[in-house]
Length: 187
Image 1 (cartoon, helix red, strand yellow):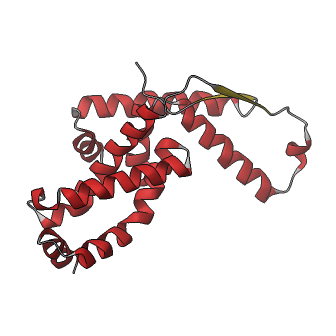
Image 2: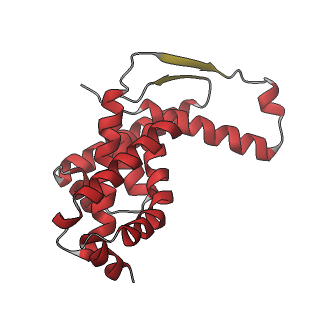
């Protein structure tokens, strides 16, 4: 079914492309939001990726590669949006042990922990964050991640390792004081 839609979209069928875009947009939005950590910027990146997909449909040789191609366009769009939105501001969030948060219900603690983990993810540079999101959120192998990002396998594995080490260190320390940088590409 998807293959037929891709072939129709390649031939200029707007309705077929719309169906493909709608079927993919939720997952792409999730990826972009995790990479950029800003729903508005994520929507911009997904829209940019879908626009590039529409304009480049004829360049897609293998209709079965639609999902991988669209993921690649989305990740690249995230990098572009992050570069445009580059800021040097940091936000300080303090959580004191023994505060009211320590005495909340389990569900609230899980939400707070998830939020804290999301902030820790944002501390990573965009290269490490993109690899972690693609590997764990989309359940892609490191070689697939490397292909999407157009980087060597070793570079993807190294970024994954360094990002996980940073996350593990943050988990060991716990949610005490978190400094969150804006989404920017490390230099």
